[in-house]
Length: 85
Image (tube, rainbow, N blue to C red; front, top):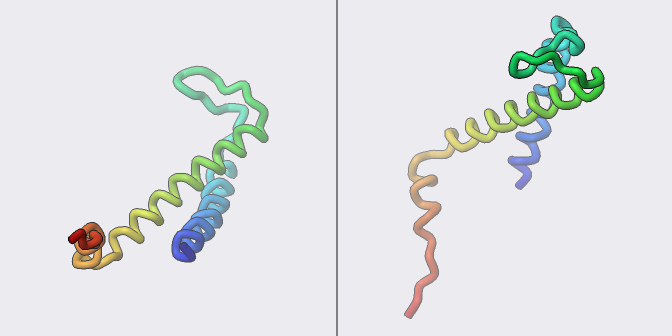
């Protein structure tokens, strides 16, 4: 569990940096979604953008953590079954 908390915590900071960089160059009032202008308030756009960045960086961190496991450990995880007599 602490590993996942660390991953989410680090992805939180990555999302903050990503949102700051993205919205430095993009005005939320000029965004389009599926060809239509977005009429949401800038706070809603910033919030949704932050959660989008956090979800993407969290997913990336989780995939990296999964790929760092040795193959033997991954294959061994499903073989622990209780012995039934």
